[in-house]
Every structure is written in C-alpha cells, then in structure tokens.
Length: 168
Image (cartoon, rainbow, N blue to C red; front, side, top):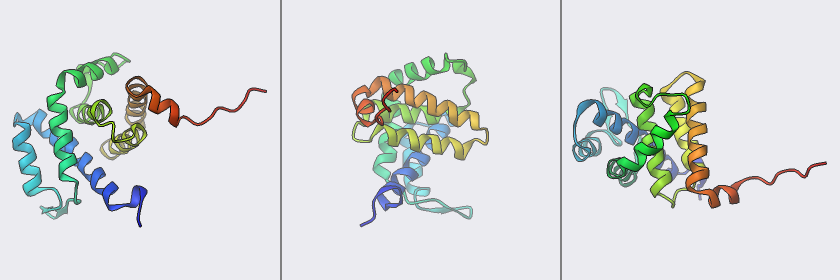
C-alpha cells in the first residue's frame, strides 16, 4: 500500500491546495464569488487539460472546503494575516498570491484539525516556493505558519516536537 507523500490521496490533496490558492487569487482579482470560481475549477481545471497544460487530479472536496473555508472564516483569517504582516510586512504590501497562500493555510490551521499542522506548514511552504523564486518569501511563510501552529495547536505542536538534547 502506498502511503505518505507519494500516495494518490496526498497528491490529490496537494493539487487541491494549489488549485485553492489559484482560485483565491482569481476571486481576489476578478470579483467572482467563491461558488462561481469553485464551479469553474471543478468543471474545467481539476484533472483537465487546458491550453496544453495538464492539471493534476485534485481532491475536489478538499479544494472546495478550503476555498469556502477561507471565505466563511474571512474575519479570523484576516486577523491572523494582519498580525503576521505586522512583523515587518505591511498587510497591504502582501502580494495577492502570498495572501492567498497564507489565507488557505490559515483556514486549514484554524478549522481542519484533521490535517496535522506540520503537513499544513510543509504543503504551503512548498506551494510558496512554486510561486516565488525568492527564498525569503518561503522563509516568511514558514515562520508565519509555524507561529500560527504553535498558537492555534499548541498541544499538537508540543507533542510533535523532537526531544531536546540534555544540557551538559
């Protein structure tokens, strides 16, 4: 049985996260509703070939849950992003794509306790690397998500932390 990062389920979730970030970007710049964009992605992008680009099969339920979750939890997501942006990045200076990555990750950390926090962090840091060449953006996302995970899921993060070496 295939498990871990190579499993079809993991790949479908990763593709769903990528599509969710793209959909959130489209909502932000196009003014369409989440329902419209979700329907468009499900009908024409997830697992489809468009303009010579083959889109990966994605977990459509997870994709829709992330997009709707960001919209439905907009106030909580925005509070987290505003607080993170205060760490030297003005909230208005965050690129739309970076904001979409942080929004999707914030929703998953806030509401999807079925997804381990470390998985959320790793997935969205990898997505950031796929969108941006600058290493600083991936490092920023990693720092922000790690901070959020420690605040929002302190027990989970403490249990997952590697044991520290004893002081000599």
